Image (cartoon, rainbow, N blue to C red):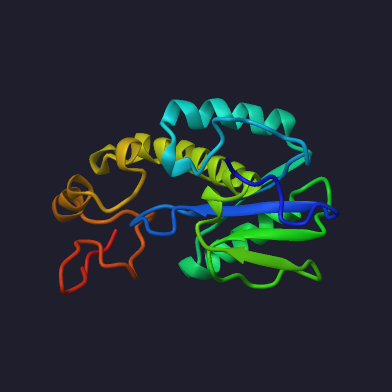
Length: 195
């Protein structure tokens, strides 16, 4: 069972991101403030759920959260994760007094204290809720990009480095959405392809 909060007295927002390890597409992050008494037996790290479960839980989270927001960024990927989380927190209708961050690093957000929690999406309800929103909103974005560039199978792989995705890069080259600083082919030498 996931924990409802770290600090019972504070308004706490859980934050997580999706897409940091992808070869293509932006990083999405979400921030969620849940009621202290929120309960849902199914809520867990988005990676532990089926796609159907994630979308069903997204509806529950959006309906029952005290506040939620999604942020997007596409600069340097680690910094993009932080900036996307900052944007998500900016979008909250309720100002948090503490942030619970999935992972082990974070750039301070204004004057709001934070705690980083390794594998926090499997420990705290609010981080798990944020992981679901970040993942489902990013999946929607990658499915839309798939319509523009169907060769890369983004509707299935969501931009992650699968064999089919890398084979398409070899055959068709890159797109404006590919991360050219990443090793796109998974080989020793990087591509010198242009879109």
